[in-house]
Image 1 (spheres, rainbow, N blue to C red):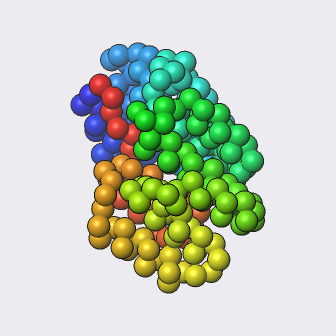
Image 2: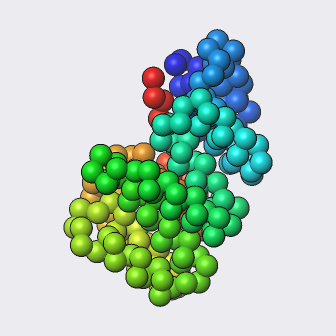
Length: 205
């Protein structure tokens, strides 16, 4: 646990080599830790070594098929290298495995990513239609980010920023959830990158 947390601290500082060193120590002390493998995958992804990231995510899923962060990171990987069709296929497969009641927050994040795959492929009408999934829920964590993404994509930058600022001023979700949405938007290029939007996976033990 201590070495995982130390790795998380180095990750927040963008010291990926330092983070890996602590994770290697954690793995040596207690092999076959799925969250360590998942974290190694995320670091490889941030370093844009996508083949290595895929290898680590698959290893994490062999070690613990139910680890949410590994399941999401594996599905999310093609999005990082802009293969939106492949990403959508993985998201849709993941969505079928999530309980609508027990995992509502996770489902909305995955649905947001599916919406983005349509939008970033220029399928604006399809993206708008998909966005209706969030319209009927006033407590939807995804809805403000869907509206902001549409604004940014359509060149309405001031509107997009205003929507995000309003959301940040009245937070309704934990930091990890907020970071999942904002980190995606930063990596697309709509808002500046920030360590606040790029958090390490939560430790599960």
